[in-house]
Image (cartoon, rainbow, N blue to C red; front, side, top):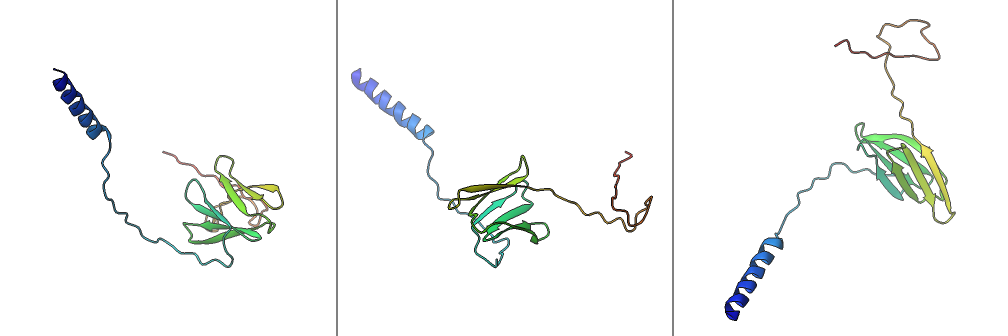
Length: 140
């Protein structure tokens, strides 16, 4: 009787361990190089935007703003050469730069400006006004 119980518990524990413990499978990973950027200076830190449209690259003395859609560096933000770390906050749309050696932190707020070609569109007022208000609407 004791022997049957022992065999039962051993069998039960083996079945539970077989079911609960995942098996190790050999897996392969496929990869493709999408793009290679040749930079003028070595990157100190990089950070992609949350939406995947931008890559912020911290280089000595500047932050490069690389657009994935345009496939080029769209802007260069000059910063002190002491900065060596970079973080991006999608919630507040800010870059946070820090310097370990100088013990300083700089917060840069980003504003995205969309250029709209209005050359062929109807307009009211002077052609070269300092301010242009574009109205987008959908009548559906």
